[in-house]
Each structure stands twice: as structure tokens, then as C-alpha cells.
Amino acid sequence: MDLEFNKREDQNKLKLSEINRLFKEIKQGGGEKRLQKLRDEGKMTARERIEYLLDKDSDSIEIGGFAGYEMYEEHGGCPSGGVVVVMGYVSGRQCLVVANDASVKAGAWFPITGKKNLRAQEIAMENRLPIIYLVDSAGVYLPMQDEIFPDKEMFGRIFRNNAKMSAAGIIQISAVMGSCVAGGAYLPIMSDEAMIVDKTGSIFLAGSYLVKAAIGESIDNETLGGATTHCSISGVTDFKAKDDKDALNRIKNIMKSVGSYEKAGFDRIESFPPKLNPENIFGIMPVSRAEQYDTLEIIKCIVDNSEFEEYKPDYGKTIICATARVDGWSVGIVANQRKLVKSGKGEMQFGGVIYSDSADKATRFIANCNQRKIPLIFLQDVTGFMVGSKSEHGGIIKDGAKMVNAVSNSVVPKFTIITGNSYGAGNYAMCGKAYDPRLIVAWPWADLAVMGGTQAAKVLAQIQESTLKKQGKEISDEERQEILDSITKKYQKQTEATYAASRLWTDAIINPVDTRKWISMGIEAADHSPITEKFNLGVIQV
Image 1 (cartoon, rainbow, N blue to C red):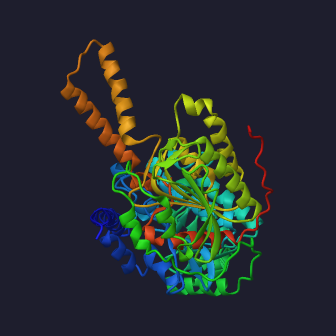
Image 2 (image 1 turned 45 degrees about the horizontal axis):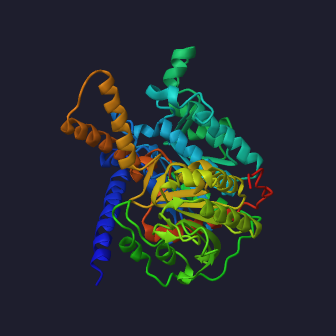
């Protein structure tokens, strides 16, 4: 029995169970009382609607579940950003479902709500996936209108995307199942098909109170913009559903009639589970982010039959490059090796650090995968690029830039799993959020920051100490430690996986055992979108 393995396993599983506990709370939306109120009104909750719509016993993944976590507390919070986004299957067709959660501020749009909706549309556009909107929203949350209304990546962008998706032939279906007001009224109407639920659904640019205030007309909301009005008089909607289930059944029927799609042509064969139990990940990963481990063991827990073909195994050893299969799909893996290695020149190299030789190797491997039309998986546990005179003189900036060039210009789909650290420029080179991964997820213990907590806190503490000295204040060792502890605590909070997920820097915090499912569903989605761009590395310093 390996005691160290068991200790790691216990502590890492505790972290996962804490994430699961938090997520269970988040799923309650505005709380059980508000959810029950929706049911009493004859409506289903957002999550009930999605559950009913998706095919039974089929795989699904939730995107942005932690959005808004510990944000907007002065406004009462915004669990899951007030909207639920799931990738799954309806009538056997893979698609995205976006459902407003009316239990959270009547489905009003916070800044994070807009960001999450845009992320859902981005996924649909990149992968040419059908998208289904289940609308139940009071519109923009007025106290924060300045942060959601006027800028490029805000509310208005959603309707622009509706129009762009329509022009690109990406299917959009909407069901108005509650309020749909003001600018938000355009979203369902810009979809290919729009339906409305009788009695509970309503669509209008301005409600009865605003109409009265603006033009003096007295009218009730139902007559103004109810289901009968829009299906029989205005012709705004295509179908009147008698209740939520009736509307969802109609969406299922529409999805049944959807024709086949042109595929990108990624290779897939029969799937085999890994020979190494994926649960072993919990025992392999150290609890401390500074400790070493062998990343090859992690890869064996993810890929089919635990088999892979390593590229240049004896060169640039701090990055592992390998081709393998995940759930039958052919993939190229770029992973940070976290154990201490010896280079071909006999020099010791730190695990998790990108050196010139490893950046050079990764650049070539990424180019090879583009040449062979193989999707890329990045397993991130990176502390950054190597520093110091030896590295600088050896051209680390040039070699790092080559890798960033390759990642940026890669045309095959990219998927990023943050397994441990994600620090500084290492985050960029290993396909961080800014480099358009189709999906980016983190394991429960992941850390995202410009640099590690200990180093950053020491730098910030030194700056603070220097400022106090300039003011003529001498500080004791106790005060110095106090400053360091306070900075460390604050900084550490900002590096946690939940902090990143709440701001949608990652799409989800996942159970490591589900990594295969996320990669497989991601590649299946990407297979809907043929590659049209030519791979071109651009100008690189050789």
C-alpha cells in the first residue's frame, strides 16, 4: 500500500466533494421558495426544462455553472449567472441549450449573464452547433445597466450573433416560456423558429406600465403581447404551446427533422477505456502545487488503452507531446511534464517550466497536428518560461514566441484542461482562454494567476515595505509577516479554480474522471464545422 498515494487521494477527493457541494447550492438558483413559486405558476424551472428536453440517458456537459459565484453580493448574488447552458443531445442531434433562470432576479441580465450567453453563442458559432433558447427573462438588470448595455461584448452583441448565425445557416430555435421584454424581445424573433407558451409567455418592447407612461394607453400585458396576440394578430411567433412541455415537445420534433451536416472529418475508431483507472488521478496529483509528479501517469489515465505515441521523447522533456486516442478520437496531446528531468546536454530542468528546447518541440508538434488534421489537447500544469541569463542568452523569448505563434495560428480545434498550475505566459503558450480553445476546463485544485501565490505575495510585500520605509516607518519582523500573510491570503483567493470559473475564464470545474467525456463531446461538436482556414505559422524567428 502506497501511503503517500492514499493521502493525496483523500485530500484531492475532499476538494472535489467541496466543489460538488458548492455546485449543488448553485443549482438551487434563487432558492427553493422561488423555484416553487415558478412551479405554482404552472411553469417548469430552467433546469427541469433542460432535463425534459435532452434525450434520456445521453451525455451532457454544463458550461459556466460557476458563473457569478461570489459576485454581485450587494445585489443578492447571481447563481450560475442567472442562465443555464448545457451541451447535450435533443432527438439524437448534438446542440446547445440556453435557459434563463427566472428564480434569479426574474431572469434579469447581469453583466456575467451577457458574458455567459455570448460564450454559448461563441461555442455554437465555432462548432456550427444548433442552439436552443428557452427564454424567461425580465431583461437587463437596471441597477447595473451601464455594465451590460453599451459596449461591444455586451447585450447588443447577442442579437448581432443571432443575425450572423442565421446567415451562416446555424439552427436557432426559441421558446418564450415567461417574460421576454425590451431589447430581449428580439432574440427569439431572430431565431429560425419561435414559439410561445399560452398564459405564461409574453413578448413586448415595452410593458403595460411603460406604455401608459409613454403614450397614455391603458392595456394589460396579455392583450399587449401574450401568446394569442403574437400567434393570431402580429404573427411574431410561429406556434402557441399550451404549456412548457408542449413547447419542449415541439422543439424535439423540430430537431428530429434536421438534416445531416458536413463533417470536418476528424478520425474516430472504436473507443476503449484507459487500462489505468482514471480514479488514480486523485492519488497521482500532489496536494501542494509546488510538488513534482510524472505527467505520463496522468495521460495514461485519460487516453484509450492507456496507449500513446510520444513525439521526440528524448528532447525538450519538460513538455510531453504525443498522439493518442480519447473515446476513439485521434488527438495530439501537449502536456507539461511536472517531474525534474535531465536534458540531452546533461542539464537538470525543472518540471512545469517551459525551456527553449521544449518550446521548439511543441511548436513543431502543433504544426504536425495541423498538417494531419488532428485536434489538440493541452494539459496545463505550467509555472511559466525559464528565466535567468542562460535562458535569455539562449533565446527563450524567441522560442517561446514560436510556440505562441503556433498555438495562435493553429486551425484544428484546441481543448485545454488545467490540471494544476496555470501561471503567467505559460498560460498563453499552453492555450489559455485568450487563444480560443473550443472548451477550457479546470480540475478542482487548479490555480490560475500571473505568477504563483508565494512569489507574488513576496514581491507585493516588498513593494509595500519599501513604500512604508520611504514614509520613514520602520517595520518589525512581526509586522512584516502580518503584511505577507494578508497579501498571500488575498492573492490566493484570486488564484482558486472557483474564482476563474465565476468570471468564465474557464468553462467549468470538472471531476478529472469526466475529462474524457468533455474532450469527446468537444471534438464531436467541432466535427460539425469543417476547417476552411489554411494553417500558416506567420513570420517566426528561427
